[in-house]
Length: 381
Image 1 (cartoon, one colour):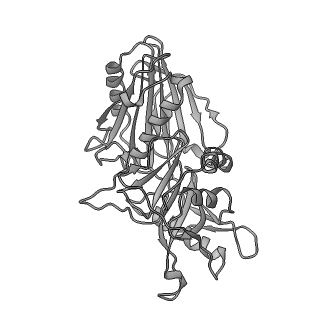
Image 2 (cartoon, helix red, strand yellow; image 1 turned 45 degrees about the horizontal axis):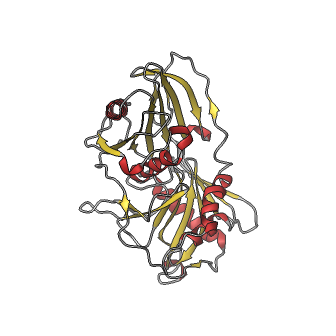
Image 3 (cartoon, helix red, strand yellow; image 1 turned 90 degrees about the vertical axis):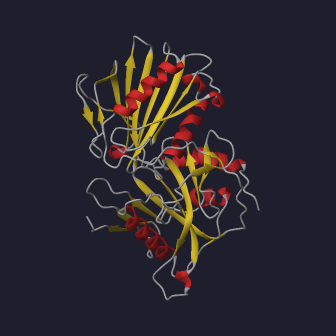
C-alpha cells in the first residue's frame, strides 16, 4: 500500500502540532539589551554582536522557553538589507533537512519576501568557523518584487542549528551570496560544529510500500511501554553521534553516510524525509523551526528473550527544542496518516525533557498505573 497524504494529515500537521506545542513554545519575547552590547547564548556561547558587517542589531527575540530557539534582527539602511540570525535545537538536528524546509519557507512567504522561483535558486556550500569541511549550505534567490535578492544559510553545531537569513533591496544576487557566506563563515566557532560535507536533499527515488500497521498494546500496560521508550531515549541522548529524536543508531555507515531524501515535492506545511532511502523509518519535518515527528524501529526490553518485549516495534516521537513526546508505537511501519493519528488523536504516553548544559533530562509518564502523572529524574548528571 502506497503512502497517501489525506486532507486530515495536512490540517493536523499544520495546525494541531502548533496547538499541542503551546506548553513548550511561549509567545515570542523581545529581550532588553543595550544597543551597543553583544549578547551570548548560555547553552552554546553563540554570540549575537551589536554590529556585524555594516548591520546594526535592533531586536533580540526568544521564541521558546529557556532560550532553545533564539533570533537576532539586524538592519543595514545603506543597502536596504535586513538580516536575521537564528539558533535553535530541532528534535532531529540534520542541517540538510531543515535547509530544505527553509527553502520552502522562502517560497511560501511571498508577502514577506516577494514571489520567488525555487527552480532558479543558486546553491553553494561554505565552511563554518571551526569546521574542517564545507558543511554549511547557502541559497540565494531573486524575488519578483519587494527585495532585489534574498538568501538563507545554515550549518550544524552538535544538537543546534544556526541559520542566517538576509533580504536586500539593493544588493545583487551575487553580492548577497558573498555577503551571506562571509557572515555565516565568521560567526563564532561553536563546540561540535559539523565537518560532514553538505549535500542538497533530493527527491526519494523509490516510494515506501507499507503494509497496514497496528497500534501496539502490551499486557504490561501503557505505563511500561512509556517508561521503556523514555528510558531508552534518555540514555541515547547522552551518547555522541545520536540525534535526540530517536534512540536508535543512525542508519549510515562510515562508507555510506546518512543522506536524507525527500518523499515527493516540497510542501508548505511539512515534508517526509527518509535516511538513505530507508523503508522502516522516516521524519516528518513540520514548518521550518525544528518541530518534527520521528518514526523509527525500536525494540521493547525488560522481559524474557523471545518474549513480548523482544519483538520489534516502530516508535513514534514528536518534539521541540525542550522536550520529546513518546506516542503509541506500532507493529509495522505506520504511514503518515497513522503516525499523525498517534500524535494528534491519541493520548501521549510520556514526555522526556531534553538535557540542557549540565542538566539531566526528566521523564514524565502521562499514563501512570494509578492514572496519575509520575516523574522520574535522570540522576546521571
